Structure formats: structure tokens, C-alpha cells
Length: 65
Image (tube, rainbow, N blue to C red; front, side, top):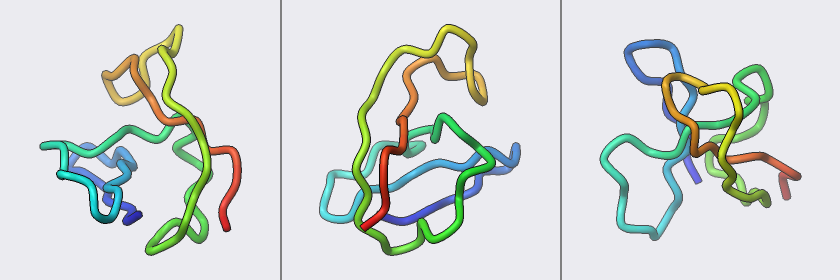
């Protein structure tokens, strides 16, 4: 997984070996980005009640391995 910051300053995740979505997946906790480049992570997607970077479907990071 690779961390990517878009033009608006939003952190997005691009999974390795996955057909890349056009914009990546929005990370729910935008402040929690330490150690995300080329890391194996665990988490899940869910619908956020408050949009993050304009998206309601976000990735909730559980752990980095």
C-alpha cells in the first residue's frame, strides 16, 4: 500500500497489486499517516457520517504490520 496526498491535502491509499482506483481510497483519520508508505495495513471500509475530503466511503485503519 502506498500513501498519496492529493492536491487538496487529503491522504489517500493506493493498494499494491490492486487495479488502481482513479483517486485511491480516502483515509478516515487524516492525521494518522505515520509509516503508511509501502506498508501492510489492516482495516475496513465504511460509510462515515461526516464526509472526509468530500467522501463518505472511507478506510478505517486498524493496524500497520
